[in-house]
Amino acid sequence: MTVLDTRALNRATLARQLLLDRAGLPVPDAVAHLCGMQAQEPQEPFVGLWARLRAFEPATLDDGVTGRRVVRTHLMRRTIHLVTAADALAWRARHGAMLRQRVLGVYRREFDGVDLDELAAAARAMLADDEPRTMAELGRTLGARWPSAGPRALGEMVIAALVPVVQLPPRGLWRKKAGVRTVLLSSWLGREIDPLAPEGSDPVGEALVLRYLAAFGPAAVADVRAWSGLAGLPHAVAALRDKLVTFRDERGRELIDLPDAPRPDPDTPAPVRFLPAFDNAILGYDDRSRIIDDAHRGLSVAGARVVLVDGRVAATWTEQAGTVTVTPLRRFSRAEHTAVAEQGAELASFLSGDDSQRVEVKALS
Image 1 (cartoon, rainbow, N blue to C red):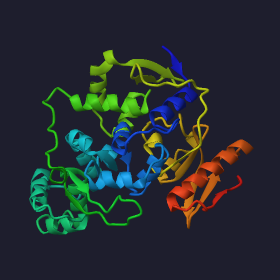
Image 2 (cartoon, rainbow, N blue to C red; image 1 turned 180 degrees about the vertical axis):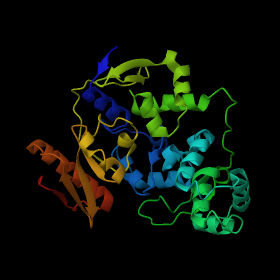
Image 3 (cartoon, one colour; image 1 turned 45 degrees about the vertical axis):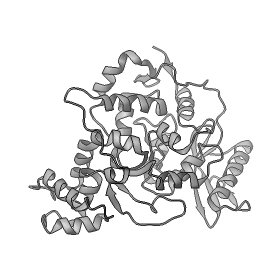
Image 4 (tube, rainbow, N blue to C red; image 1 turned 90 degrees about the vertical axis):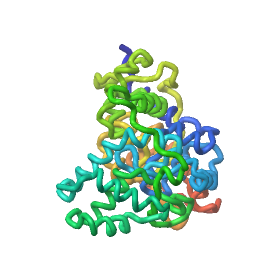
């Protein structure tokens, strides 16, 4: 079995994630290709799309959100993701059990003795009037019926797990600050979510595996599980075996992939890319060593914004008052320093709308 080293996996990841060459895709198509974008920080998807698309204009994502072609909702790993309307409807039921279990992992005591189906029905009845509500409002109202659970636990269980909802704009629009207000996903999109498949079949799981590999492969089954949060996908992988090719990584893990997906030459040059917080190019794997050193793995879950140099996380970045500040994690060559500064200047201009903004690349301490 062919062994793919870390650099080969890195270049494959960059190609699949649209980070090797910026793509000329419409925003909904890019979001679909990426299997959604993690978006609990509302402004971060704008940076993620800027890093991946040619001539990206924030207004195009705003149009997608207000036009209901993309939505913000809880899905993979119980985190807020920006996904296409079609994927939200197709994937939500498949994620339902996982979402419940993850919320119960935080609030199991609070829900001792609470009938979750009854709670879901009560929450749906509240939301049936299509009036936007906050998590706190839902929790307070439902707390009159289930006082022992507490309003925070009730609100989070409803919005993050029991009832498919969307976060409404202006939250998630360019340079807008707004609290979370939710309505039913089905009401916002004018269509009910797709039902679960009959027992013993998992077409959604199989579709998820294929879509994941197109955006993240080659990858191990553990990587698919880490990205999705779903435990049952080995059955979907087994059903797809005849359609996949296999490799091994340097650690001996089996990797699966689509036969015709891009796997660039490991020596393919990789441009500098600035990534937003919680980008799935990093978080979408169990073994993240293809793109970030184990010593820096904590950055990926701490919300650090990172810079890819030669395809790997080599710095963090922040922005304040129009200045982008880059803090290296290793020493840069002169050429790397220049490339980081140039790309940082483009990012500063994008974030501020002003071509005269500054970039500071700190020296390694």
